[in-house]
Image (cartoon, rainbow, N blue to C red; front, side):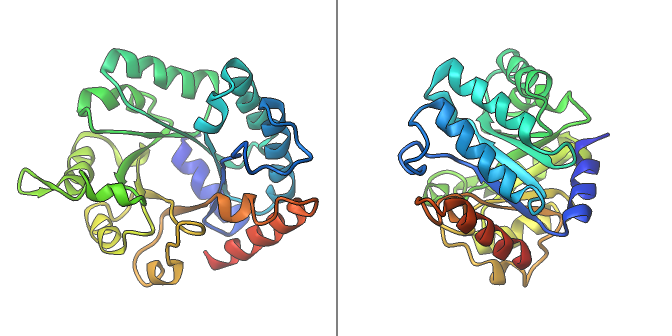
Length: 260
């Protein structure tokens, strides 16, 4: 099954566009968990246990695990085996390098870990991202217009008579099939979101920025959202860091799931 097909089946099954970001900040996880890779794994698996009937997708952010080296990578493996088979998975790894290097990044994510999709930085050009698209059954989310303030520094600057982010959307659609091409499109960038949908009307958007970053979902819903996955991380994971964290996380996940 192609990843894009799995996305549509998962969305139909769960009835929501909610993607829960597994971003277990070691400084914020509840004190009942050890401050190491094992603690991140245990915390993340509890979050999955209490939301697996809610979330269409889970996005695992490698940064929070890689600080623990091999133990952190093992934790990612443990978490992946805990995610239901029918649920869509995203490796939030933001890889991007020369083609020879990217080939092995792609093999790591898609062959070893067997994620359904990955986030990729396209700024080194076509040859740096082609290896990811060689896995034609998988899905690649290119960083299109991000939710952070630094998006103004490069992505909104002129490049070839267009803004750089516009070129990312248009040129990548010329190069690759829409079946395995998605884009990261930040909820905090409403005008750019509208433009991105004009450039890529049918591509799957991974939308960060709702929740802790303050993206306005009601404003986004006035425009063409779907197909999309709307990611919420801190707004669910750390609604409480006390003994009631699981109960609060589930309640917040249910609230978000109803919104989109």
